[in-house]
Length: 50
Image 1 (cartoon, rainbow, N blue to C red):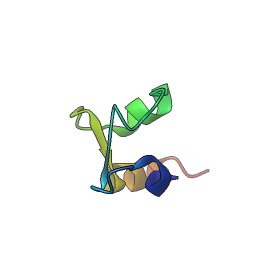
Image 2: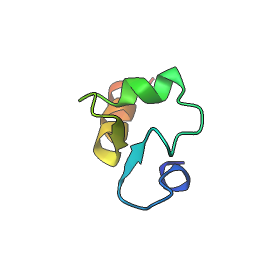
Image 3: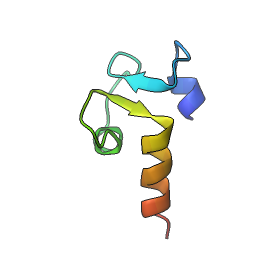
């Protein structure tokens, strides 16, 4: 999923790359810099495994 959203292949998702920024994606941006890195996505996934 991440690779499909990362249109410019810079390793981060910007607001522009998220066509409709869902609340879940905003929660992934733990440093609130407007991008979601792979590391942030992995950390979220690890923390929310059920």
